[in-house]
Length: 124
Image (tube, rainbow, N blue to C red):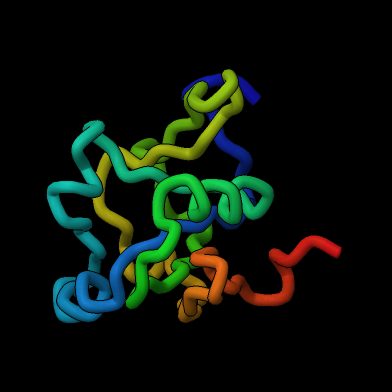
């Protein structure tokens, strides 16, 4: 996979505040707050990247949810670009259409300040 290309059928993930998500429901798309678009795109992660991303950028933050997003509904605005250690990360240069969101899960914060992800993300 090179920059600009994306798999045809893959889910990616985004962490946001529940209040921001709830405020977009009537708009048919999730337009993140300006602070989340400071780099010019919306940061997404794969299933293998999301737990580390949350620990690095959202540790200790409460009131967050995890959006699961079907990439086949994102079109050309989704780009895979080198980021941390040259690893390719999905970046979205536009809003998330609500129809692309396949699941929404709460992300409670544990006593260690890290989020408790659904079982499928937990490493054994």
